[in-house]
Image (cartoon, rainbow, N blue to C red; front, side):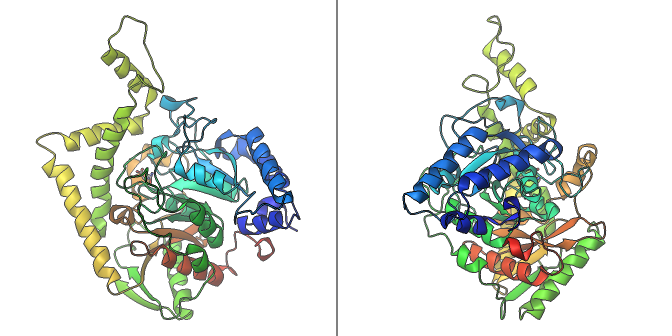
Length: 493
Ligand code: GLN
């Protein structure tokens, strides 16, 4: 048997269920791997060692007693540090929430615990999920396991790097403009943004509420689907939660059949700004699907090139409103409260000290875009573009079953680059943002390596609540491309 840390979550769950290995052994193996490599990778902000082992032992006892176990029982999971988990810090990568421990669990935290999964710890992210490189974290960047001098993407670079470095078999992420898919692409892993409302946002610290969507991160399509099944479904505590059954993503992830499927290739995502190695891998992936019987058509989505601009008005507008809650009065960092200063002064000093440059930039941008006199010109226009993008998708999905594009224009960039060239970071989400604006499901799947030896991801997008199509095409890609690029050996599956 390969070492426990290289096995898939599905395989680990099967071994635990039959008693061939214990959850405690599996958990220990991952904690050992974290201890061995995380000083170099820095995927974790907090490792919850004692509680992880305690939970694992409880699951083992449950199995021995013959109690029924869920499909991922006993399997470790890493949690992006913006999901509340009682008893552990939830920092959002910010000094503002340094050492803050939430008094309640996020819905996704509750659900993985209820499924008898073992939370290993909290993973690094760009501050309040604002960034594409994990470098805006107040606690230092995460390094891409493929090349430690490069970023693992962001904001969920910690979760993606933890998977690529075999520190966790599956992880939780959240995607506002690409933060699950873009890190997946540049670390050679799988990341799915479900339909907006498909996974509850309750207890996920908000960035831009009309765009934020929690979702699964994994090394295989089936593992992502199994975790999706655990965390998905209606939650009355999230006002935008969809009251409908979770699409059968697990069955889809085991049906790598695209014969007769109509796949649209987005015409606007290619050419200038796209790394040639990324484009080559993308076209090979599409050709492989054609070889498997899919019908490929080029589809024009004329408003997609405007999505990035609209996003950088809508997102900061919502950020400026969501960040207002960090007033240093109720929880979080408080600075300069010496008994002589006014509330406003203390708030100003606390927010000044607590937030990093990127968060402040977005608060200012959003406040400006929403200010009276500019509201219609900026926020209003951006919302109109959002509608046009939704219409582009509607038109496309009237003729094709799914749309595809590269997940990102380039492979992982060097640490330091996004901080000196802001646009380099912003552009990393060019291809992922339209689906957030439209609320549709989309996933990134490994498609091989670019000429520089770094992973390339391809994106599959589907209509609202057709998340299963994303998984079906993803599993076909995994099967077709495996000979050329296998993040895991066959034996590990
Ligand atoms: N990178 C994008 C941004 O900086 C998306 C972030 C996210 O999805 N949380 O806004």
